[in-house]
Length: 519
Image (cartoon, helix red, strand yellow):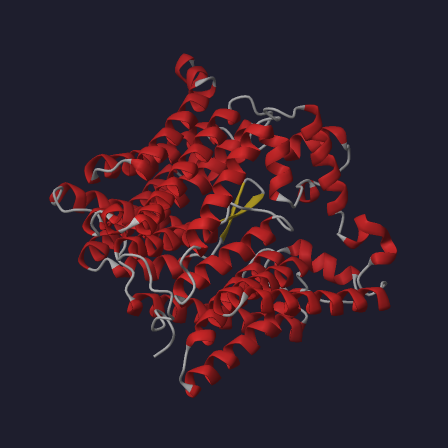
């Protein structure tokens, strides 16, 4: 009893801080062996902290009732992870392909009457990657890392040195943000939510970032990943078409109720939320448009155009305004990188003007007759509540993961599913105050600088940079920033490509051969 009291008292909070420190070491340590040890320790500590926290909760009732079955499942999962690690040691590019394939898939797991949609396939892939990285670091500790093997970029010129320094700062700011989140979780009114954020999102995604950053991204590997994610997007869009044609929803019973209450019908495909489905489609479309802008063969242009048409139809059926806005912004960034920025501004202004005329001509169609809160599906009120929370504690906030608890405390009767600001900057301000907001802004600015600087003429870097900017808009219209694996995947790939550019010297400014266009 004394041991359990210690474990359920201050130990989990100290454990979360220790977890953040291990993540920081995995992100920043220059030597392969210490970095691998930190990755293994973080991946081992995270589930231990979670199990301690929920040991007596209904979520683990199956484990208590059937311990042998749970142990057998753990053994099977361990064997799968070991098998993946062996495959990754033999063929490192396989890691990139499996991460790409696993990114969209969330498995609904029911336990104790609660359904959680977890990225189980991605966790398994990352675990295999961590084990493989540890094995290779231990077997060949003297082999230089990708960054070391590219040489000293500072010696190649000031621009290359600036690129290399900037990529380092992205990792540093990620480590700072994760550590700050852990520290601010210690005084949160919902520590359990903060712990789950660390275990389910920040830890595995940070390790995924580290693994992707270390890969050698050849043009062939980039093309194969693009083809894979495009094929998945088409498949998901087809599922959405079937949902719309049959007026059935595969997941999310709450969406079924919402569709029954409205004249329109929203699809979500294999995703739990239509906005998450729309986000995925929008980001894939940005990448495909980047390839289309640089590809020269007519046959490939027709194929890309046909795929984009399918994805556009799927995106329209989500009725996700935030995803449409993200797509528009991503297209604008691509246009500014491919042509003159002034042309993009003029075209963007024209599109916005046409949209404004359409909204003013038919205000009821866009819900403006319901007021700002109604038109935004209640998000304006949530943002106002978040701003009020920030005003109450402007410096340090209410603690990581506390938005739902604190918002419902002030607004009795609010549904749990609605108690989120849907604007990541507001959520951070309410939970973490000015301290967290500054860390967030620094990370965003450094990342945009790294991803867009030198991206002109390089379709792969242009696609990653434009997709990240589009994602940033979506996170401030919907939710989830570092809680989305797509964010970390874009960061890992973008930093790897930027580091490669820095190591190769400053680009000439002329358009290079497409690095991931089909063919």
